[in-house]
Image 1 (cartoon, helix red, strand yellow):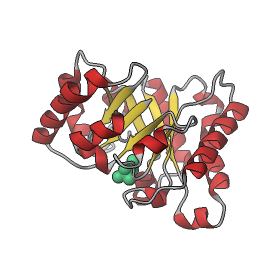
Image 2: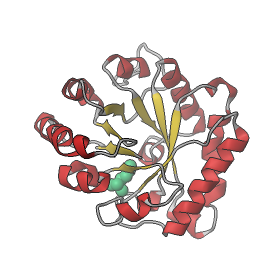
Image 3: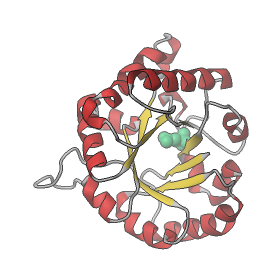
Length: 243
Ligand code: PGA
């Protein structure tokens, strides 16, 4: 089971030092053998996070990367730079990036290609809006968002999918368990059929995962892990989710 913590634009050095010390001491020794933790802090803290997690099983991920390789792109951070400071993963296509930065498949395709060339593994986030969900459009929307994975130049990209219904993010709402199960199954079958995958892709669920609902969500056989936002900012809550 994969437990990915998306801190978004939260925290500071003090928070980072303290929560990573707690994860190392209170969670890692008790984590099931087949489980792993990926921590995704803001990019300015990646080096520090890597330093603290050196010699532990905690993997470090970034929350985004530039769609450009390098050059005059003020404020951007490249995939190579993320890898250079010790990131193993990068989250791409988070709904907050799609919404506030108009990220679409063309742009995400470029980012995924650069992530692949930099040796980063990708957590590709996909999800539907409340209206799309209400109008039974979820699978159409997800199929469209997943179609980038089928581009031939992304062969050999190491990736997992995070299914994050937009209406569930930060709202306290979650889909019914049967819905999560059905959608995860759909994602796995879609990618198995459309790509030359030898095994089914791992799919995380994200959106208002908390200590109260985590066990039920984790119990679904189609759920390979969770991507946690708000609750990952508390070591205690994150521990309860991971245990
Ligand atoms: P949330 O965020 O757990 O706060 O709903 C999840 C995410 O956006 O990755």
